Image 1: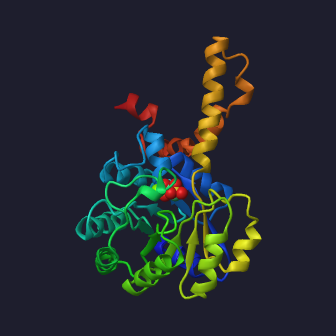
Image 2 (image 1 turned 180 degrees about the vertical axis):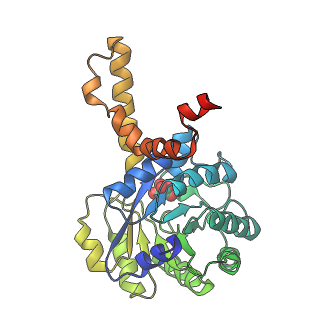
Length: 297
Ligand code: SPV
Ligand code: MG
């Protein structure tokens, strides 16, 4: 099945489904091996891994380069966190074209202004896009896609910006009518109350995606009860790897030795396995001239 169709199935499945964050080829592969059916290419995580801020400091083509490695390394679909679409409708539709060329299954755009800032940084101070302008962007993206199953998710930032339920509903409905395949309702509260009141009013109109980073203590069964389609674990590979890298760097710095760490880190054999070194060895046997043949020339 095409990656786009796989993501479409996830979004329309009757069960709660999950996307797990990855931020480069290796982490994408690790997500697939863990059993996940899809990947969230997180803007926060990809930019943090590049050493820059989540404020469009990385150009969209630099993001595309990372995505290409992620896509090549995996067979499960990737949903790109496409920020605001990196400009107006024209930039966003060109993004769709380039994503399809790289076999990325879908993109999520948020109704903020370029350059954006992460929702958890001073969220209420962030201006939102005009609804009509954002709807035009969604339409342009849907009109541009070649593959009918390519997914566009519209992310509503009105709760984050402090606008309240009526504005969230107005925007979600407008984005649904503009052709978005799902709406992502974001909240920075530590409980799920905003999502709950939205789901009650929304009444199953269209698939809903959530990012429970801040309300992490809510049991997953509550997402199911509310009829959420997809939950995104948005940044946990990044955060786990930061912790691991900080610990190992500090220890090696202090010890000036590897004696104490060898047993704590992944073996080189595991690194080679993840890189599929065996496939290259087999290919060399098949395609490189053998030593005897070279000598015989
Ligand atoms: C991301 O992962 O970059 C997201 C989700 O956009 S959040 O950080 O919660 O805004
Ligand atoms: Mg983001």
